Image (cartoon, rainbow, N blue to C red):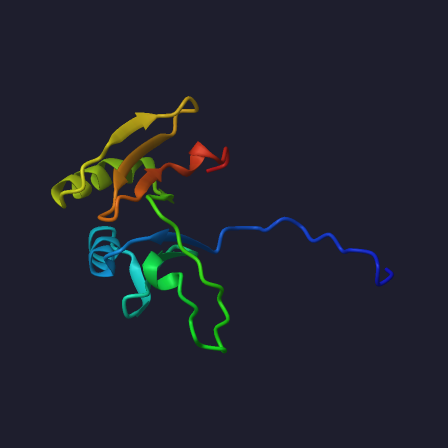
Length: 146
């Protein structure tokens, strides 16, 4: 291969992390850690809080803080941020969806939609305290072998 040829890598194998934005990280931490039961990985003041969801990391950023440069040359992450609600879908089994619906309702986070897709997979939709649209769905929504 010459210096002028470009190697074409395979497509990414998985999503490693996904980001949502919330102005109130205390509420986000209570929701994602307490209501959803995700393991907190780290929190950095009022800038971000990270959670583990299986083999993926859910990043919750305060958008006002992440628009500012980190000021740390050892962490050259570019500023970023988003306005308005985002969306994230968590995988769960059919048997667990009803329990999740009951837990969310009891915690004051009502389910906005609960339905079966044309392929038979079930999803429930709800909102986190920041207004992000969250979904829990059977993996067979997207994968035939799930």
